[in-house]
Amino acid sequence: MINLTETIVQTVVNKRPKQSHKGTFGKILIVAGDKNLGGAAIMNAQAAVYAGAGLVTVATDSVNKTAIHSRLPEAMVIDYHSDFTKLLESVDVVLIGSGLGESIDVLKKVLNKTKDEQVVILDGSALTLMASYQLPLPAGQIVLTPHQMEWQRFGEVPIADQDKEDNNWEALVSMNPEPILVLKSDQTQVYLENEVYQLTVGGPYQATGGMGDTLAGIIATFAGQFHPLGQAVLAAVYTHSAIAAELAKTNYVTLPTAIAKQLPQYMKKMAEQEPHL
Image (cartoon, rainbow, N blue to C red):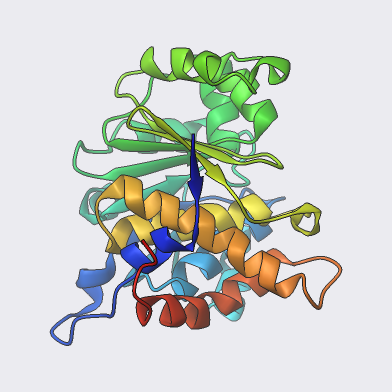
């Protein structure tokens, strides 16, 4: 097991090149938020925008459009019941599942259209629905972001057995394509390329609704602008909890939206530091 430290962020997050444009930093499509869980889509998108995505589009239930526009004018918003095939085919990263509820038709529509070269992040309800309907993994470079109960459903690894790395690997290698796993808990781990990475920051001050939605948004945007994918995922996971730990010095709880707002400052600081190897 390898401990995740600040070095991963210093290595991955670099100064932006002078000759760049919005497309340089990733086109992100977020498919999230049914009529009852629009906040998940907002937190996905807020994290994506504040982490530096070039373009963010949110496909969500139409009842959420006004709220997202008012909270986050930087993001574009479309009704996920409409035909957004052309948009889906044009993006670099697809994040689907946060607050999606029982929207199985939306999920199937997206999973049937992803491409091998796209990064596809499966979060929240996407994992639960895929387990319930026994849907295969879609085309793409896959990142799974379950909490322990979602991993029990999707990976069929009981929570009591998830502390044994071999059990989680056995579930992963049976999947095609083999995904990156971000297994969220009070001791979050990332399973990547035959290695397990242990998060070394964070705490109970993060135990609040929406924390995973913000993390998923950061992962999506890091995947869109930093390479290789595995390193970008590791840096995103560390960044999320490192900001939370800093906020916890003066706050009893760290709100997901507060973490998102600190992303530009934290990333600026990391980009200007040399990695501590």
